[in-house]
Length: 192
View 1 (spheres, rainbow, N blue to C red):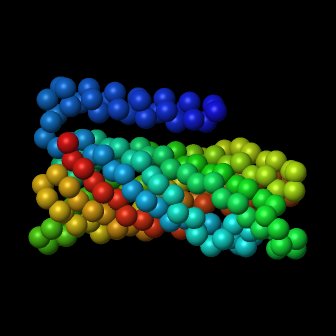
View 2 (spheres, one colour; view 1 turned 90 degrees about the vertical axis):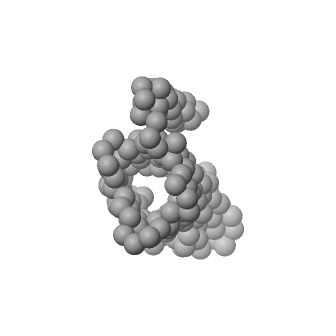
């Protein structure tokens, strides 16, 4: 519940910033609304063996273009997955992960409607896992990098296809847990 309140407060803060920038006359398509869908492939092999190779989840991202093709962004996404413990062969595990990220981005048009984008930033990964009546939860800051191709559909709309990596590691009594991994996805960009 506290996680949801923090996330909601973050997006209300971003929305207030965007609204403020828009009302101050920055109405020349500086605000970016970027809903998308992501695929996550965890870098930890034991995670993949229990929960599957890939998790698909929605991501909400907002941004503000502050100079030419440079922008700052913030995003949130997450998933909840049930898994099977290999030795027992039964549904005995459940994981929840959410990613709260922010950073700096750059996009540029290359040829006609085709261009590219690059983003780097920090991500806070919150996790909760329950397996065989054992519960573990926490959060950790890490790095996020992403890049890809963008296709301008019109002056206000574009589609991005991207790949990236999130790096985050938690040290615990039973060993290190790598919560990062490869990501890929599609995002619709709306410029306001």
